[in-house]
Length: 104
Image 1 (cartoon, rainbow, N blue to C red):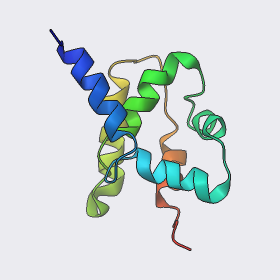
Image 2: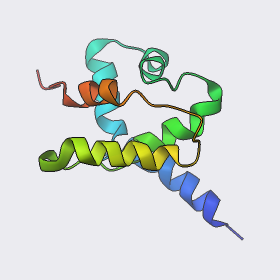
Image 3: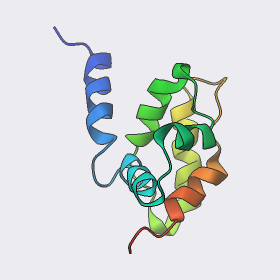
């Protein structure tokens, strides 16, 4: 039998790279700038292996709505951190990465 945690983990892994979720523009940013995954995670304070699940969960969150970008992103980060209250995510850097135009 599959439990809820297994299903959620599988969903997070899928959504982390899907269009419409945070992982997609983060991946595009790395691709366009040459920034490595390790460097990007370090910028956001998610470089330790203990934050692997947080990193995947963050990437699996839906993109903020453009008209409520800042409030949505704050809410998303707060939600992701509920499972790990001792961790931090540099929200201002995340905002900058997500707002960087990636079209050529």
